[in-house]
Image 1: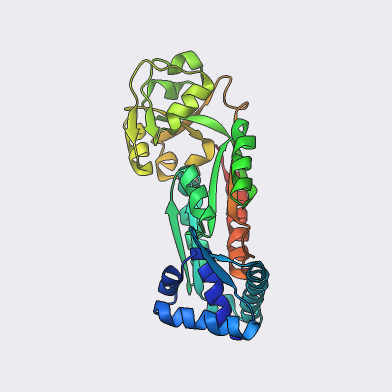
Image 2: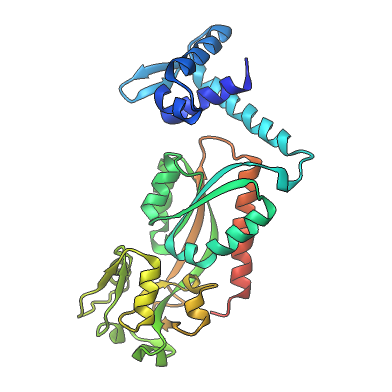
Amino acid sequence: MRIEQLQHIIEIDNKKSISEAAKTFFMGQPQLSHSVKNLEAKLGYKIFRRNKAGLIPTAQGKEVLGLAREIINNVEEMKTIGSREADLAGNLSLTLGPAVFNAFASQLIERFYKMYPNVNLMITEDITLEVIEKVANRTCLLGVTGWPDEQDDTMKMLLDARNIAYQDVIKDYFGLIVGNQHPLAKKEVVTLADLEEMTFVDYYGFTEGFLRMFGIKPKNQSIVVYNREVLKSVIAANEGIAIFPRFFLFNDIYFERGLLNVRGIENVTDQMKVTMYLIYSRAEPLSPLTKQLINMIIETNRENMQESNI
């Protein structure tokens, strides 16, 4: 029995397909099938059986896969013992929601590569349900995304159903993002009535959802955008406003130069909270390197919250 055979069956279980798993190892399907058959012959029982969904583990196979994941995780941990952080290598993937991406992605990348220059960290941005889906199907290792606290029970039920673990990393309030020459920039606290006369910049439909939640019925049609930087540039040009968690403006050059401002909304700010969660699959143990990335995400956000003057 070889370590690579355990890696083979874990990946087959993840992909539910020998042909798809073979691509991960840059090998042919017959070669990977031969590896599994050899392992099954040594164990004396089948690890997988086939159904309409693809390859699924047998009863014995489930136990073997659980042990295999523990072994691989322990092997990875053993590799880190006595190693300098700069010598560690591997691949990590992280998907962030737009607000948190804007707030700390650049800091995280800079800090991570100083400590782990040989690790490939791939960071992408996506909306909440897509972040959850990527983590659930294990196309992404970690995600950070969130929702208003009044949706918390519903969203956690979804995460539990998808076998996804979660821990909160940021708690904050919603604010109104306005340009420095916008009429509402002169007001410290904006009323809901003020917002009904304004044009909103709607990112992926988020703003429309927030408006309904807050009971706001704007008279003007929203400007719909699908890019975070376009959103900021339109607001900075004073062509529209948006509702976002206030940490959206952490470490942001538009905010630091005074081109964007955040204003409180009466009966919304300081009452309507939003929580961002770090999420990952419960299907297999976290590697030591992944745990280090999680700690770095938590620490970076803690520092941001302490240093922010928003």
